[in-house]
Length: 315
Image (cartoon, rainbow, N blue to C red; front, side, top):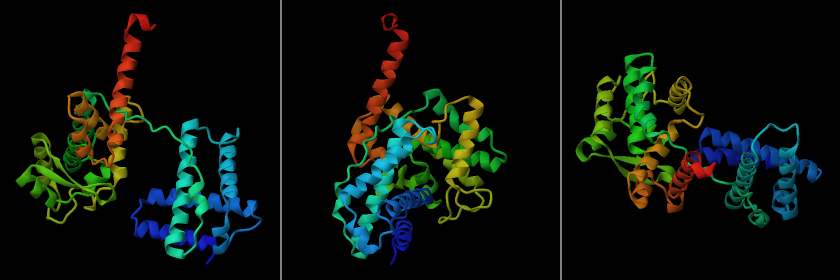
């Protein structure tokens, strides 16, 4: 098996076994192509399977130095230094995952990759919508839809995202049968990242919007997707993102206002209302409390910004 064939098998494994998203597969494919392209020049030829196991830490570091130099060139696409660092970190992650796959599935081990340091990145702080914007979003977005069916669907979808703090993928993976569970228990059973399941309470106003959407759903059988497109298939995230993007442009809002920003808004507004951080962690389905604590940092940054702009002595 050649190195290129091994990469192809790895990507197929990512898609089937790990159920990685098409965007992740595409990014990893590009990252690994860059890595192998560098190694062809660096090692005077594409390494075979045995050669992949012999790549040294010095070789890996040479590749990472090359990536950093490429990002610093004047001809490189203009990106922030932090964004460029995140890209390099993702490429290291792709290569490390590839070599872990080789060790587990192909019997090719290379311990040197574990010694390669991942470029440190600053995790961006969550950027929520203002409360009035988050409250207005579901109705305003639905008003821009072309048909009554799409209007009812969008109103329910975006109210669910803000009212329950769901990821867009979590909301779009729901089926009609999940509404029956909600009717009897006032909660939704959500399957999150890594197959982790959590129960999320549903506010009455959200329940009403979901039930109203069910009455207009084209085929509300228990196993049918809850949110569907005009052809009756499960709604694609790109459609929801496009609907919010149109509202964002018309409202003059910044680019970070996306469906995921409604999840940030859910968490931030709960925290501002005095909710316990552990409760927010459970509702969001975060594996680590440190992930949830980013919302406290974001709130501190917002308070500092308000103080800087408002206090006479801050000028």
